[in-house]
Length: 291
Image (tube, rainbow, N blue to C red; front, side, top):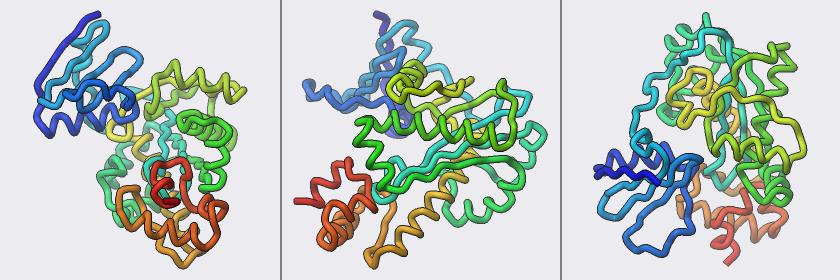
């Protein structure tokens, strides 16, 4: 076992968490001096309360090597990028999007301001969207809360649901636009690659080949950034449609205390069956709603 340690400041710790959020493990609360822990396929990363970060694993020093910072790609041919939206929102289901980007359109995407959707306001994304969809081919899959909740009941693992939705979206894109089967596919990495492909043993389907798993891909790759924006727009449309079904305000996110209040109003009106039509029922928030 090789180790490497660094002391990080608050800003660096925030960037570390953004990079590793999908790999965080929570069942480690035996050491009061540990604030967070992550486990990737290659390394175990422990963050201590004194801001020291310990990396364990083969070639631990490689963990700190910089990743690509500009939104671009080294791929010189046409390729597919994929992302999902809605994972952290209590209200609403989930949307996945796959974008087919022709290499000659990369500069045009940069010119209209394509970047990570998290760096853009909803208003900016709606402004960009009409131009964006003229420059790429795309498909998306929008699962409502009820559909999403049924998949959670079936698979008991949200990463399996992400893998399933991405796979269906990619296959639809390739089929709809008759895209060559050897086209490179970049997926925003939410789980180690070996885990991703193992999920299809549970799904009982053959996965579409993924060429590149990239952490934080929406910040580094144009096609994934475009997919992130389209998925966000479609998720907002889903939220708008859900709002039409109730007089209770539908809020984004999961941390606003009013979310519990509004979800309780839905629950009081129609019980758990109605609540499942609007929220991700497996969230810890549900316990507070039902209490």
